[in-house]
Length: 108
Ligand SMILES: [Zn+2]
Image (tube, rainbow, N blue to C red; front, side, top):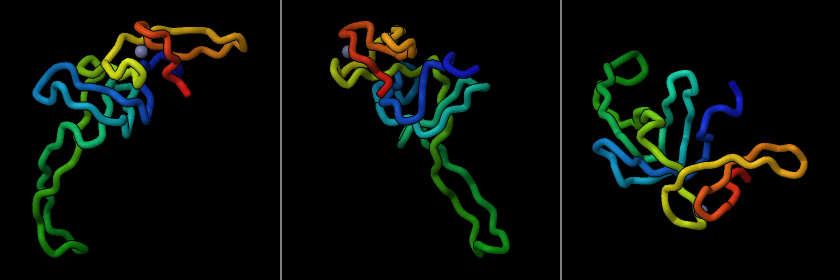
């Protein structure tokens, strides 16, 4: 369902629990059905690749793994902190997300 998911691509977020706690980055991908997101340079996992026709050698590549959205918070760039997100309806009827702390609109 569009509009229900709290995070969007390019949001600046911070991980607030788990082993990556305290790290922040941009959202690269959103998996709405799984409630997971991929954040730039966060939660790297090593993946073994097998040698195939095109690559002669197998090896290990590092790749971002999805993080559950319950482990992240949006960073308000004005507060420079992870904040709770509220909703606001603009004069033209458009729904936007806003920082509950300072009122800054997070959708641009
Ligand atoms: Zn704020």
